[in-house]
Image (tube, rainbow, N blue to C red):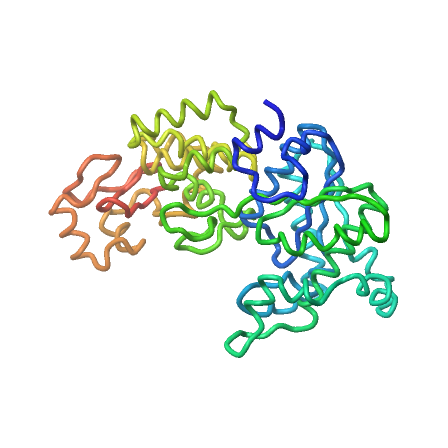
Length: 402
């Protein structure tokens, strides 16, 4: 299928200034901007990175802008002013995000740029005269985030955040002039800011440029922005969200949304998607689509080896696989998720030491009531633990004996 057909099928089309969607089939140089507001991206950002992958695969040239300059202000939010980052924080965050792009895009060709490189030499008065003169206050005030932040009941808006659109517009103009960029992509919440560069390019460079947005990904069950869990934001850095927790997030998505997420977050083709959709309808309890989603996305973000380890550890806890089949790395992953006990001790001691039971008497009562299993078998006596066994209390409390 053509690029435009694939983007429509996968759900990457929201708004565009292109005259018709098929115009995206003609290769051009595009850019995606991300601010270093944290030392990792999250899975909302990952959706846009997947759009980058599809564009590159169809011949487009990619520029990734990590905003050292815009990061000093912060992309305006609808509800409140962002906390300013220190220069050290911004520098650290830029490096971390650039590393994530390199890891996720792999061997695909792309270039990383930093808008601080051109803003650090711009004179403020020159910027107002040459750029600010071409922005209409009427249009700026009409932006959604401005309306939500200004008024007697609103949180207020600083001039710094109000000026963000001008900076983003100049980024587009600069990249048009220096890199031949004629397309900017981003999430639908960036539509207003992304439009800022188009009139600048027309007026100051006598050129034509366009923007393309994809929809925000929404959890169909909760109706909220996708990427949140009970534990908080799902990050792409394993230091912020462990590989195991990352895998579990995808494994536990709802049936109603899993096929949509597969289309956005993986490169599986129509035939593979059709088979998984059929399985979800006919055998929802098997969760084949969720398993495919979890493995594919974890492989993309963290590599196939770590994805396989997360899959294997999951099968030990929930699928009947034996603990002694795990590699040392997989055992370490398991140990980061559940309590561990040393082999050779009384099971009562193991239950109390790990906090699964609060006292020796409670541990003995659990044993006598048949509430403890070892490798799936009920244990009622004061069993001496062996290495590489899994102790389970009830449905969800585990101890790994290592």
